[in-house]
Length: 75
View 1 (tube, rainbow, N blue to C red):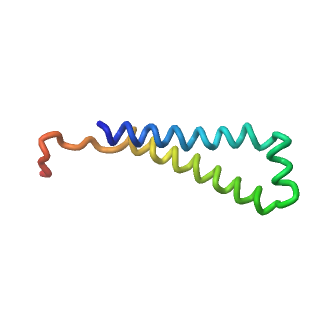
View 2 (cartoon, rainbow, N blue to C red):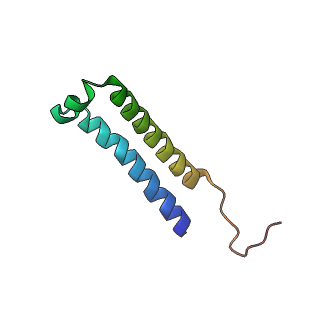
């Protein structure tokens, strides 16, 4: 149960990071960093997409993962 909760919270946090990037990327402070250096913007987009895909994978693992046998038997 604790493992599922940890995976769920981690997935939500990673997707939250992606959503925060989507909100912050248009602000003038972030644009001031990205405009002079397009590579920085490209890297930030890559990290943001890795966060959302990783978060979705963690949540999918929780939803579609097999239930472990509570008795500890592996038949």
